[in-house]
Image 1 (cartoon, rainbow, N blue to C red):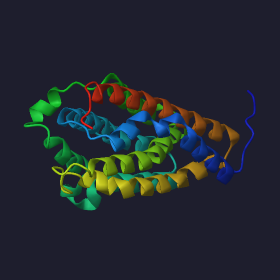
Image 2 (image 1 turned 90 degrees about the vertical axis):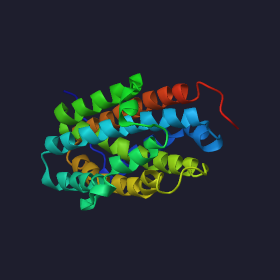
Image 3 (image 1 turned 60 degrees about the vertical axis):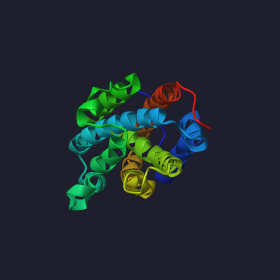
Image 4 (image 1 turned 30 degrees about the vertical axis):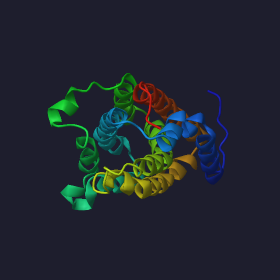
Length: 238
């Protein structure tokens, strides 16, 4: 087997951040449209339900990476993120509940929400993330986790700012996005510990981390392509 050269962990981390910053997934046309246009009610409804189903699948999968992580010090940071997702002990601040406030602006019942089929990329995202976090190599699984957290910090800020222009969406309805504008930066920071822990051990670990990052890029690119085609199927109100 070919030996993978070990790069200094901090250098490798910065290289991977630069990779993510410059990848087209970080600058998708979806974000430009969300930020620059005033969407119709139908378009916002499409965004709301598909983002909810994406975030819900991520939430359901997240405990699997904790189970799959053998190192307590790495698990520690993951548990910190999971505790945040569940409101630090406040049931009313569970993030899924905060997001559902936004969804219910556009839907009359839970049944109506559930009847909406997931986009193909949403279905694939949930299935692949669950499988990798549950059954994949722990280092590869962590690379996927890192990429999702790192990319999430900017996309949540974009979504939060984009939704602020709709007068009928109060801060109560937008609390999930307002909170994640800050929280996702913290989650990305937490994830650096595990990334550096694995990176310093071997070049093979660095290869697995990068493969996990590339998987995250692919899954999110597919997601944004589907979101863009679905949301902007009808002309926007400028």
